[in-house]
Image 1 (cartoon, rainbow, N blue to C red):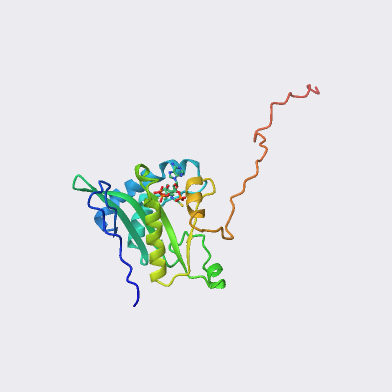
Image 2: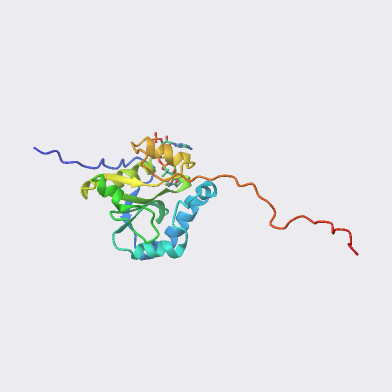
Length: 199
Ligand SMILES: CC(C)(COP(=O)(O)OP(=O)(O)OC[C@H]1O[C@@H](n2cnc3c(N)ncnc32)[C@H](O)[C@@H]1OP(=O)(O)O)[C@@H](O)C(=O)NCCC(=O)NCCS
């Protein structure tokens, strides 16, 4: 007989909140944006690329884009719902501003689920929530027949990098941001004495 996979029943004695996953609604957009700003405030201080949509306008546009899946992970505190996690993914490379080359994946017979965002509220990090978000994304990839999860992470976002490595993510042939120090010269030349008068 095939095994039926069931979720573990919540422990009624546990005082820990239950985290639920649901799809985002239009009415959630403002507070989700506030949530993302909070999560990425620290990360964006040190990374060369923004690790979240660069503007609220861009974030709001994502909601309208076809094929983008936005998931909220929520708990209820004092009868009020609180966002504690967020995931965004798509089967296609979305947005004219993406640097991703679709041919790279096609040539390798990869059918990725692109993970655009993965975020856990700073006060709830280190409690297994990120693992839950990742499990949900992997589950989506599996049920949709995707072959890989593909994401981008800054090398100096060490916590996230460790998190992905511990979950069997390996580096692709991705861009490395390089910089070379340029020795500067002043545009304006220094003062120069006039020659003695020839008169
Ligand atoms: C990366 C991130 C999603 C992980 O979420 P999380 O809820 O902390 O994840 P978990 O609790 O499931 O696992 C965290 C891991 O870090 C470890 N950890 C816990 N507390 C930690 C801490 N203070 N510092 C470093 N590692 C810690 C845990 O032991 C666990 O280890 P494991 O990988 O061996 O399981 C979360 O840190 C985050 O949202 N960061 C900011 C946004 C971000 O950078 N997103 C990724 C952009 S690409």
